[in-house]
Figure 1 (tube, rainbow, N blue to C red):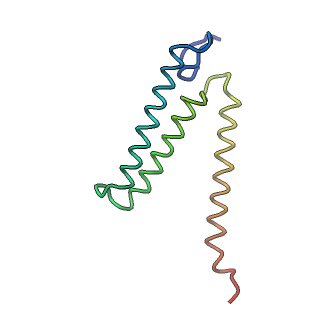
Figure 2: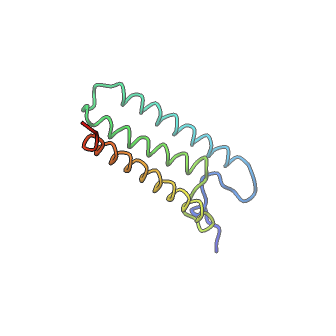
Figure 3: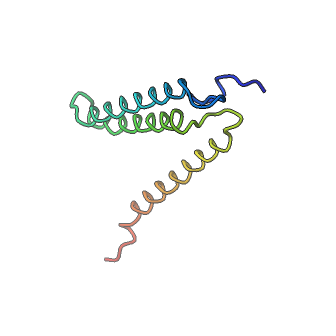
Length: 115
């Protein structure tokens, strides 16, 4: 296997910590701060259509998670990171099941209440 940059996370170098790792962390913190500021703007502005604010915040939250996974946790799709990707996918599955189950229980709670 060749060790190409596309198989590694930003700042993940084989030589050890250095300038590329610091640059990747700075890019990650910059993107995270930008996404956070944008989220605050989306939540407080009246420029956006009111029902679209929740969708915009959800998209920004997913982007924020992606930035953290790639720049800080160094989770990539390279061959040496298969277990990390599977762990993230399993975590997303569990969280999805908990949220869906909670919504289903809350939706059907009214019908099962005693009079």
